[in-house]
Image (cartoon, rainbow over all chains, first blue to last red; front, side):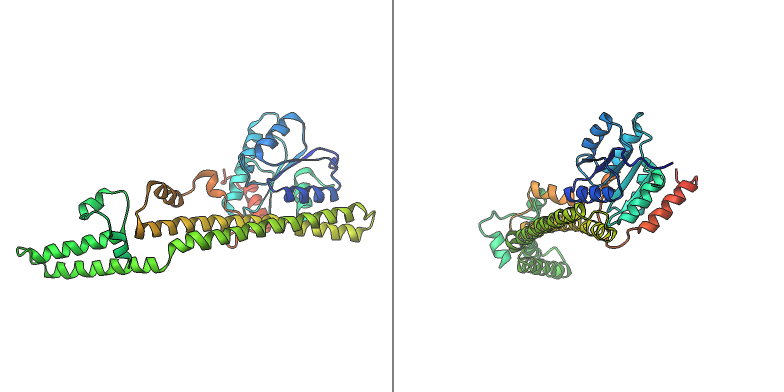
Length: 128
Length: 216
């Protein structure tokens, strides 16, 4: 099944530059509906107000980190099936295991390129 | 001389008094040891020759430690060098951020005017990818700044040990440095220079966890 490129995609990062880069890379991949949050709490509020098709989140943010956001998403009956990709500089095995146990759909380590981003989105949503 | 400076004008106190304080003052410890040696000398009941020599040597070592610590100039490191480095790092961060934003703005303009030119689109994509360095360097600089704060706290402790003693606030800072991070906080270390996993390692680990029942 083809990916709906018009579905709302949430990107979460406390570095404004990173949000800008992600938005541009997603636009290059033909996604048209991209919304931003600068920490986990803000993202959770937005996710509860509108239906999204994908979350791409950084890990290291305050006050709510990416992994806390993920746990909240998975604990929420309305959001628990939402595809969730973590993009982070945290590359230790313990981090990957913790994210997987929290229910992450896929995991991208920074720095990354658009090909990796595309591949991981496809692995979660299907080819596009 | 550090021992003279640290003991002048202070009440004459023995080792018992020092032990009851919450502060550590190496100069006072050295002086106390010297006084103990003097008392041992006067006490004919003690066969204190060996003890005497040992304590004298210990006092000498402590005095030397005080001089070495003073020579390291922890006060100058705290007041002059560390603030300068931190300021420089803040400037670097700001300049890198500004430059990255300008590059991204220009890349976006090129992108909007690229039309269907695949080569331009590909080049712009690479600019976007390359600009993610700002995020990584920012996190690395944050780690350096945090390490410098740790050095500053320890240098303050060294300086205080030589000059005035460690007060409650400084002791709290030192304990915070020594506290082992637990839970989620222990997982946050930012970009790795060694010991981190590559994207391929991570993909393999995730696949293994998907396939195997043992990961829980």
